[in-house]
Image (cartoon, rainbow, N blue to C red):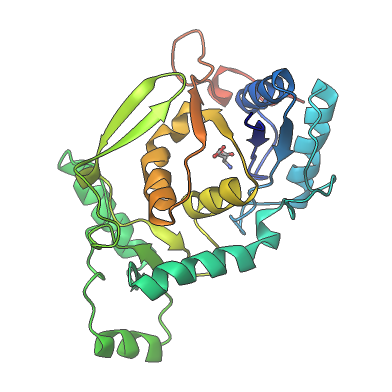
Length: 267
Ligand code: GLU
């Protein structure tokens, strides 16, 4: 029988919100029902916004709610460490696999350039996605940029024959059934940021795999990330976990619950 392992993976960039608490509750109940394990993983890869104080508040609020976890930053287990900032060697190891296969490339585009393109795409009614500008840089161009001290990100080349992507990526979801995404609408996404930290999608897949997570239960604002994550699982020949995307808590006016509607922090 499959061992159930779920996880709650907050980013310590603020307080625990009721939406997060609801996601944690589902993960706790599902693990408990199946005599499984709930892992608490701290996703602190946003170096600017993550704080230790926020992590402490989130852990404290989960405890106050009575939602205990069995493995986490304060509960060492076989799959730790449980803070992403302490797992950088893992992401380096796995990005190397992509580098060796030639399915990632250095992208030297600046934030400003990317932002300008994003806005232009939105203004013309298109879904913004990276246009692949740095996909075919020559060795000389790369050396030139590096000698200028330009920083770069590592992007996954979705056109790489190694990935052998079809026209669609199908997300099998326990709540919504099969959700279809057109591959064409997904741009080459970042695996490693210019500061050496992993992107959310990359770190999430590496950790969910290495922590042997059987069920990824999270808010459906992450549903559009899941096809990207499935591309990574397939590229690394890793089995998919089961996915369940939960609807968000809405305000009485049926828009996303936010500070506008009152206080949303658990505390
Ligand atoms: N750190 C992400 C968040 O707080 C977690 C998303 C996930 O569960 O994969 O939204």
